[in-house]
Picture 1 (spheres, one colour):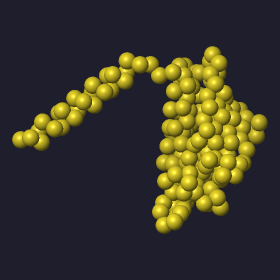
Picture 2: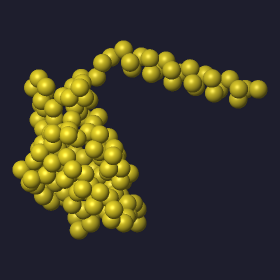
Picture 3: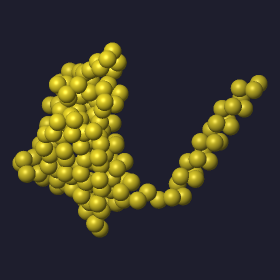
Picture 4: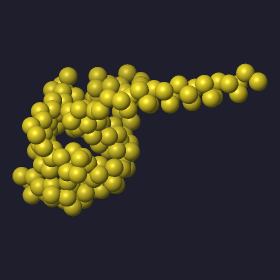
Amino acid sequence: MRGTYIKPAALGLLIVLALCSCGKKATDEELIRAAINRAAEAAEAKDTAGIMKLVSKDYRDDNGLDYNGIKGVLFGEFFRPGKIKVFVTGVTVEVKGEKALVTAKAALVRGVTPFKGKDVKSIKDILSENADAFRFTLIFKKEGGEWKLVNASWESISVAGLL
């Protein structure tokens, strides 16, 4: 009998928490940070469509890639075997009207990389020979009320540069 009251009580608590959080509108910076987190989660899930939802159809970069080019690069990366783990650090967001400049560092680890007998769960667990690290400069633009990536540049850095 007691178990029947636990589930409705827990559901009620979740509803109250959701309603309370709805009262505060997220700032543009929070929305962009959330988009970056969703992109990292989508990369770990090898979900090309999940990442492409965050990319503008007008995307262009200095490497000659457009929207379809980015989609192709992601597909190629995600087609390779093995798990992917993404760590994002040092995110800064500067919003100016309908545009935002974001800098971030990220490490991409392929497969399950043991470190002292355990899986990679934090940046400290990464072996530098098993990861690629990058510094990104990203430009987002507000399109239809959503922040979309319109340009990106990146450079390789050492894994130590993430800490």
